[in-house]
Image 1 (cartoon, rainbow, N blue to C red):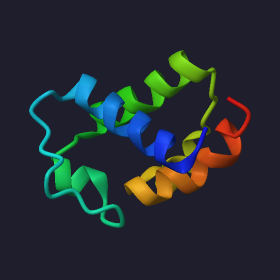
Image 2 (cartoon, helix red, strand yellow):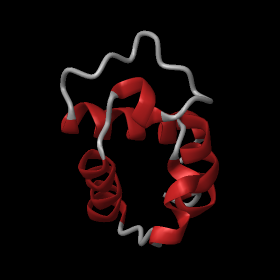
Image 3 (tube, rainbow, N blue to C red):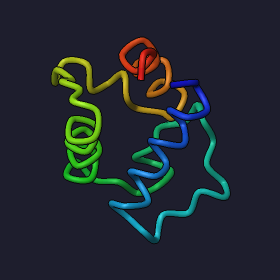
Length: 83
C-alpha cells in the first residue's frame, strides 16, 4: 500500500466508527483523538479493525505511534508495504 492508501484506510476506518467525524479541518500531525473527539474505545476499535482487515497485530506498547494521521502512516507503511 502507498502512503496515500494507508491514509485513506485510516480515514475510512474512523468514518466507519464515527460517521459524524469532521475531516475538513483534520491536520495530519496533530493527535487524532483531540481533533476528532475519539475516546479510548474508538481508538481500540481502530486497532481492532486494522487487525480484522489486514491481520495486523499491533502491540499495546506501540499505540502511541498511532496518535496522528502522519504517525499512523509512518507506523503502518512497513507493515502494509506488500499489500
